[in-house]
Length: 209
Ligand SMILES: N[C@@H](CCC(=O)N[C@@H](CS)C(=O)NCC(=O)O)C(=O)O
Image (tube, rainbow, N blue to C red; front, side, top):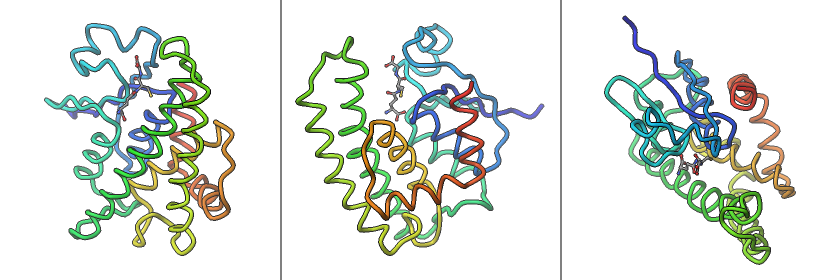
């Protein structure tokens, strides 16, 4: 019997990433659309899969995997693609790694997610307009790096759309939702990437399940 990948989690920027990656790679998968803070991440079944009780998570054969970046990398490495660029050259792998760490570390975790904690989730983590404002400024400063890069590049890696773009795009959508206005090259990049069929499909799946 064929075993399907199971992806757990929907409804957030982080859960969109593996769904989008799976759609780009045209992988058959089953989505378990559990949400954060619904109690669904606290069940015994899910805690066995991800003891952190967070989404997204992947289940495949004997593998249980958490962390949106690790999941997307696993999919990218283990399934071939005709739609996206997957680097095999050491230099390109290193550059992809550098961008993914930057996007995840600086744009997602240090800026947008801290804003989320002290604004949307203030009842849990405490309200802090000072922190939120500092994150806004920090995000814009980091985004300059992206803006300059996109002046002469259509995608993060010159060879084509891939993993780093999935991470960047999910952060840009999140930023727009938080009423950031994106600089010109970045806004044009976002409009362009938003026309990808796999993105449109993944958005529908992620936000309607
Ligand atoms: N570093 C993790 C972050 C995962 C994460 O924080 N997920 C949130 C939703 S975006 C969650 O599951 N929150 C549930 C909770 O904190 O109870 C990743 O990139 O996958």
